[in-house]
Figure 1 (cartoon, helix red, strand yellow):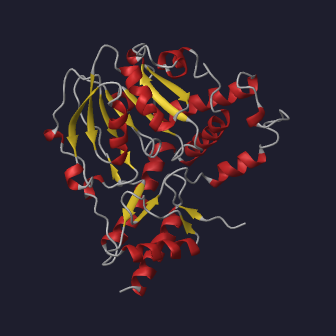
Figure 2 (cartoon, one colour):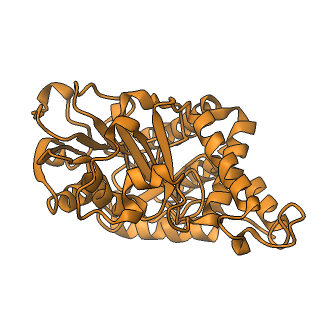
Length: 360
């Protein structure tokens, strides 16, 4: 069997040892005589899986005791509704920092529930940077300040956590969570879909400070009321059981690699190798401000869309797949999450150099 190097933005590549273990346990999990997919979500076997996954996640991210971890469904797009529903309380407005396409989607959804204050935006730059903190126009009466930690489409990532004063900071961390250490205490809430660095699509993780629970609007469905989910240990309704199982295997794999500090070193090395190659190229370019280039999603293009198409086709033939850029921005995009080995990035770099030599 030949495995490709999968650069998909999500659902994304998973660590091979995780896939191998899941395959070995598919028909019989730990002598239970059944697959995890067949288990009752309230049975003792699955409760063991859930408890271990929760404990490992808290350990890896060093989640403070005052925060609740929720395993739920809906993805980040669903959370674009669930977060304002849960955090508005008696407030009427939300501050947003707009850094790209996912920020725009979050803002569009928020308009249904609250007044939106666009505190800062990098739209004028074509979403190639992050607005400087001194330019932000924050509202001290806002329910919270929202940012997208990494824009997978444009390839812009926050490498520091901004100070927003006493208003809670909320972040969509779908594509950066567990790629490096994160000081959770700087946030009121973080959320994200699992399908980048954690596991398969279907699982959504919310980490929320206890002080923000109990504010849900009356229209909030009970199954997405963070207070209800917290009080029921993420078991108010049937959770995405198999996705949680795979996530637990990934958490164990990350821990075995050396935890988040090791993940950060590996991801920084992969990103530097690719960006250095692009910076040295006379054919390929990356337009993102170097101070906020994403370590997770590296975007690049040639001056000619026809060459971009040829590049992607040649990459596919070499087992370097899912490199076509998002339709909004075109070009190419290499998503190099935790599970992408250095060898995969090196193979891409070699192909970039080969392609450039052929098209000078």
